[in-house]
Image (cartoon, rainbow, N blue to C red; front, side):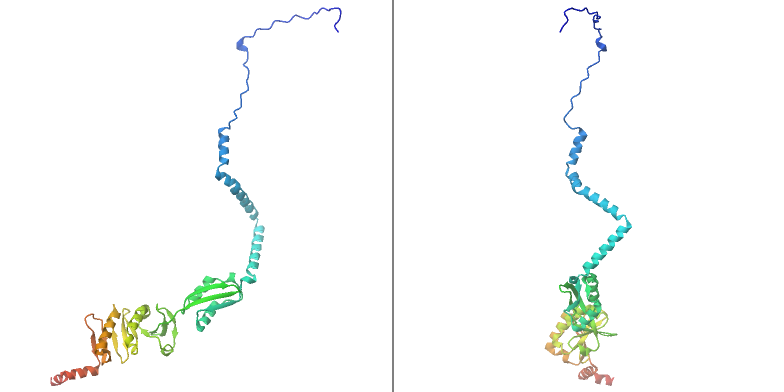
Length: 317
């Protein structure tokens, strides 16, 4: 309620407002509007994180890096490394000692009885043995070192069987040297030693230095001399460059260094016409391409000289 008697106010009258110059009025600060677009660096960072390589690194590379660093830190301790190595060696030994990996039998195929015994002696395996302890390459090399073995194949079959397949060299000739007799195959490789010629009566004999290096040519000559097979005693290598065909009755056919087979075939054709090789001849020299040269035996030469009257003329002189 307002009082009925008015009271006088003694308050000071309001002062007029002071006029401030416009230059002294401070400017009004306005808040700048925020740009919703990302900054340049933020944009580049987002593009980099979305690239396939960075995504692959974050998904695969980074976990692997963390795993490798952790493993390296764990293996940095000598005791832990030694314990890990011991555990791995134990696990490996237990795995290799399992019964399914044991080899208890060696089976040899493709070899004669004598060669099979030589192969077993060369194996020298303490059966039964784990298949992991057998060096198949070294065992094969040791078997192929045998003269009679051309090649060998080794396989570990189920049931603990070491299967050895042998390709045996087949002797085709007897090589006579100063030290004895040797069986050689078609390539001239030594197969085995031979005690006596009678042990292999069906094989031809070759002799001379370097005869083993020309076995293929010797076989061709012997094949061409098939019409004289019953009289052939062997081939002799002369000067490591040509052959002499040795027949019975001390006859020899001197073959040329080049193309010996055609030269021998010409001689055989002449023999069929004139029965040349059944005459009293010591050597037939085919080294000349023009005509063969004959060397007669002393008796045949004397008979020829007598038939021509040369002995009487010499006696008169």
